[in-house]
Image 1 (cartoon, rainbow, N blue to C red):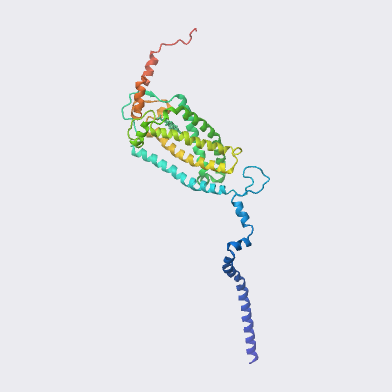
Image 2 (image 1 turned 90 degrees about the horizontal axis):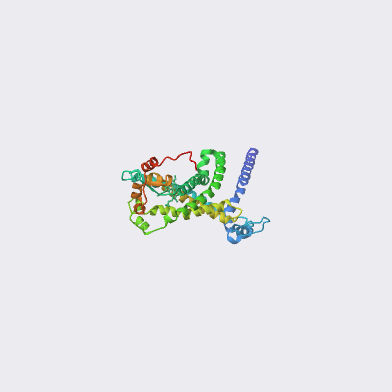
Length: 358
Ligand code: HEM
């Protein structure tokens, strides 16, 4: 072998050796993946896992809400992880936040449908004579309107707090929403008790007129809810249903709201979580119902608004919507008066001297 050939063979061996070292240097670390892929599943059987992670049972117990020790005293202060909070968060951000807007949208569409199908709301069919029938006292009307205004404030602020993150942050920005959320929370907290008190007063003052009767069953069976004329007393079954929803549902919303503003008294987290779910869920149904009520009180049954603003309705409206009540009031000898009668009796009143010497 010539010297030149020997040199070439030596440098080839060095090159091959260098390449082998390089390849080995790159491949050997990759064997870790082979270990993970092949060996690890065998280790991860339940028993092996115990050995490799002896603290897992401990954390599993913590997750179950098992109590430990804390120097802080109070309900659930010894519980490190509150599992109920996770369930609460899933319901609040799941069904309530997802289906809530749908409930409201469906009710609004329903109201729009009623308006269209009734040809722009029910109008009084007979020409108005000007005679009127007394319906609600001044006391009932004042209580109704304080409660209604409180309800509308609670509606605006409550929906802002429930859907604000999704709807208002994109519109107002994080800082703008933060300022509004704090204001909304204060308005909500202070208006709630006003609503609760006026609700109780209204329920007590209207209770007698809303007691169920056989006529109410007929109203449902004969399609009164679909706008058909079915004989009714002072309030029809639909109105009574709204009253009882207020009396029961409204009170539950109010009581759960009181629980929420008194965390120092109702300290347990589970109580607060349940109160919030009941409060928000029922309030959404209440708001949906109020859309129908507000529509019926204004455009749905033309002339009804006079009942709760002026305290009386036209005798034609009374006969058309509440015939049994109308005939009863008439039979009782109630004298129906009109603006003309008022004007006439004012003219006929003897002038009273302003400087009387009593
Ligand atoms: C703009 C809003 C509202 C309007 C126009 C309105 C209109 C009326 C009218 C016209 C009546 C008398 C019905 C009749 O005499 O046949 C009435 C009664 C009543 N309203 Fe309202 N209302 C409004 C808001 C509210 C709200 C927000 C609530 C509850 C949170 C409410 C609860 C009631 C209740 C419980 C009655 C008694 C009805 C019954 O006994 O069936 N109202 N409203």
